[in-house]
Image 1 (cartoon, rainbow, N blue to C red):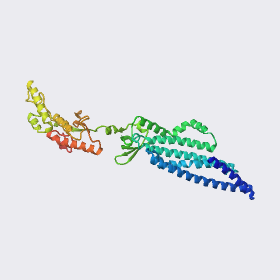
Image 2: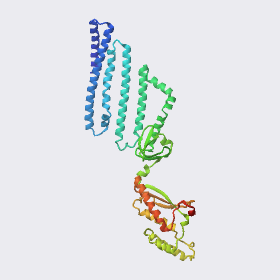
Image 3: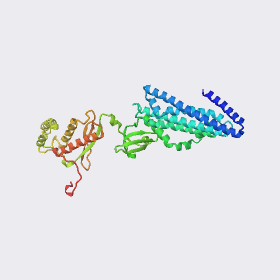
Image 4: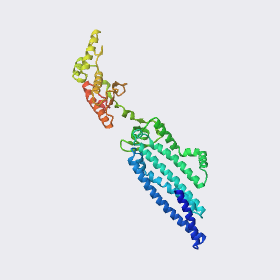
Length: 422
C-alpha cells in the first residue's frame, strides 16, 4: 500500500514539475515551486498518517491492556510506547519520499535523508528507553524481582543502546560503515575504559551484588564510611540510595558494596528476633560471700526461691560430709551475691514475654576490667521493630539496675567527688 502511494506521489511530482514548466515558469523557479508544493504535501500526508496510525494503535493497545491478565501492557501504555512506535511509519514514508521531493536538489535531498535517518535512530533509542522503563516498572510489581537491582541492568542496556546509536549517527553523517566506527572504538578502548570507569565498576558491582544476594531494595544496611544507616530505596548502576532513619538520603557508589565493608541487617530481620548484647559493670568491692541468714532473706525473691532452696541444701550437705569449718565463710562451698544475681537475671529473661525463647539466651561474666566486672546479657528480642526493640531493652535494664541493691551489689560509676574515690 505504502509502495503504491510513493509510486503515485513520484508520478504526480513529475507531472507537477512538467505542468509548471508548461505555464511558462523558468526551470529554476519551477523546481523551487515544485519542491515547496511537494514538501508541504508530503508533510501533510505524513502528519495525517501519524495521527491515524496513533489512533489505531492507541485503541488496540488499550483494548489489549484491558483484556490482558498481565499488567505489562499497562506499563507500555503508561510510558507511551505505542505512541512512539506510531511515529516510525510516517518517518519511513518521509524517507522514501525524499528523492521525489528533492528531485532537482541532490545536495538538499542528501541532507534531508541524513536528518530523517538520524531522527529514526533517535526515535528507536527513545522506544528502547520507554520499553526498558516499562519492563523495569513491571518487574518491580513482581514479588520475585521487586527487591532486585533492575535499575542498574536497565541503565547498562541503555548505555549499550546509546553507544550503538551514537556510532550509527556518526556513520550516517560521514557516510561511512558502522563497523569502521566500531573498529575505531576498539582501538580507542583504553580511552573508553577511562571515561566509563565508574560505569563499568558499577555494572560489575551490580552483577556481583545480585549473584551473591548481598543487598536488596528494602534491606537495612549500616555503612559507617559513608554515614549511612537505614533502608536501601534504590540500586542503580552508579549509586545506591539509602534512606537513613532521620529521613535523610545517603548516596553510596555501587562498587563500594564490594570494595568496602558494611553491615546488612537482613539476617536479623528474617530471623526470629533481634539481638540484645549489653553488659552491666558491677563494682568489684560489692561482690562477696553470703551468710545463711542473707541467703534465707533472698529466698523471698520468687524467681530464685526454688534455686536457693535446692542449692543451699546441696552446699550444706557437701560441707557437712567433708567436715568443712564454716567459722570462715571462705571455707568450703558458698553462695555469692553475684552468682545469685546472675541466676536471677537468667530466670528473669526466661520469664520475660518479649524475649525469644527459641534463640540463644545467656547471662555471662566477662573478663574483669579496671572499672569492674561486666555481666553481659546475650538474648534476642522477639519484636524486631527498632522502636519496640529499644523499649524492650530499656525495660529489661531498668529492672536489673533497680534489682541490684536487693543483692547488695553496686554498679560502677565514675566518682563525682573526691569523697567517692575508691
